[in-house]
Amino acid sequence: MGDKSIKRFYFSSLRSRLILIILLTLFPIFLLILYNFYEQRRLAFREIQTNTLHLTQFAVKHQGQLIEGTRHLLIALLKLSQIRQTDSIGCSSLFAEIRKEYPHYGSIGASKPNGDMFCSGYPMIRPVNSSEQVWFQDTIRTQNFSVGVYQISRIRDKPVIVFGYPVIDETGKIKALVWAGMDLAWLNQSIAKIDLPEGATLVVFDRDGTILARRPDPEKWVGQSIQKVSYFKTILDKGRGTVEAPGVDGIKRLYAFTTLEGLPEGSLYVKVGIPTQRAYAYIGKALMRNLTLLGLIGVLSLAVSWFISTFTILKPVSALIEASRRMAAGDLGSRAGLSHHKGEIGQLAQVFNEMGESLQKQENNRKRAEEALRESGRQWSRTFDAINDSVCLIDPDGRLLKHNQATQRLLGKAASELNGHFCFEVVHGSSQPIAGCPIVRMKETNRRESTIIQLGDQWLQVTVDPILNDDQQLEGAVHIIADITERKRAEERIFRLNRLYTSSLKRREVL
Image (cartoon, rainbow, N blue to C red; front, top):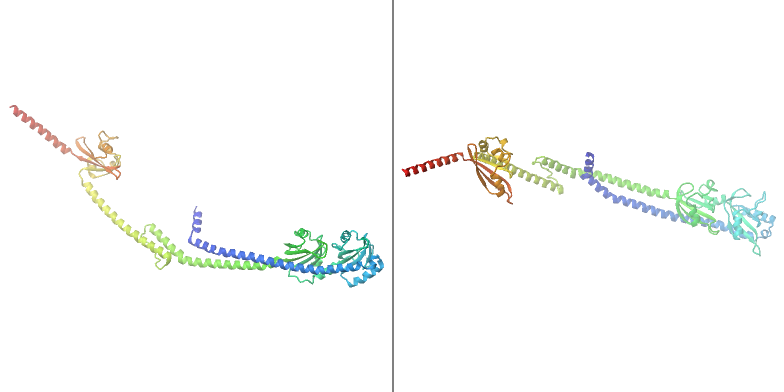
């Protein structure tokens, strides 16, 4: 219970409320910092996205030029008579010369429609059949320029990507296929010339997701698959776009991807990734800097408010509270002081002091009035006790509330036997009102009632005067008992003398 009251007091104190006001004042600034942070992140993301798309377009253009050159080369080769006549010796000799001019082709040759190779720019160690290769099947199926997937050349045992073109005779049938396998090492060398931002990656991969070229670290990644990355299916479905996700190396980047132009849709892809963490790091540092600055401002504001509130609010208020406690304890002379304070606290202190002076005056007047009442009461008691007759104040039920000394003398009873007891108990010794009791009649009539009773040798006259409120309701009565014994005896003597005198007159008349 005590802990709860302490916490309730703490959170309702002036200082805690002042701290709450400062925190509420700083809260919009905090929200503004967060909004600025997310806005900068959004702008940074758009800038990265734009840069990534530009780099991707440049890489596609660069790769497209290489592939377009290969396509033109194959078109030129298929027109040669050695190819159309399937001249193996003449064709191989010609292709060997072409190989020297285009060393970036890991393999170059021609095959028959059944897949058997009959011409090669490099010496053939053993017979080679390409009918199961993807590029061969696509060329047969489309009768057009096609591209294969990552493979190891069976002529030179090097990774290549093969491009094929059909040789069609006058009847529209495929007579032969010319092909060129681009050396992936040379492809990686070519993309190394493209300028990339720090931490960025450029990847060329086939429809199976096998990496053909990568920058950086081509020797580590060429031949690896990206099928396991979360966005691979997105690339295959959309063909081009952007996505923010971790790459095969686990680093989160913003990737822009597209297919290479001049090829059957979905043959080769290029993606460029720029790490967002590096760009966001500066924004994150700015956020931390701003939050730290806001925290320092908050701490400084709290410290200043703590200092100022202590001397300008809390100490004056504490003085008022202490003065109020002293006044509540009865020290009406307690004053708050604070005459030097201005503003609301000074006004409050002035009102408090004026209230204290007013209460002190009222208390002094009350004490004087009480003293006057006590003196009046003493005088009234002296007067009350000086009355020879018994005078009592009774409640509506007839119970004695106050009596004078004559009552004790008349009834021969102590004060403890009178106050709080019923009249019929102390006067008649009866447990119930007697017949003709003036108190009973007075309660019925609300008027004065009187009767004479005899107690032993004493004759008493009992008079009861009602005390009524403004609504004429009985609140009590004045009960007066007068000892009329002597009067009764005198009346008896007079009665007897009167009888004797009357008797004497009658005897004289007889005589």
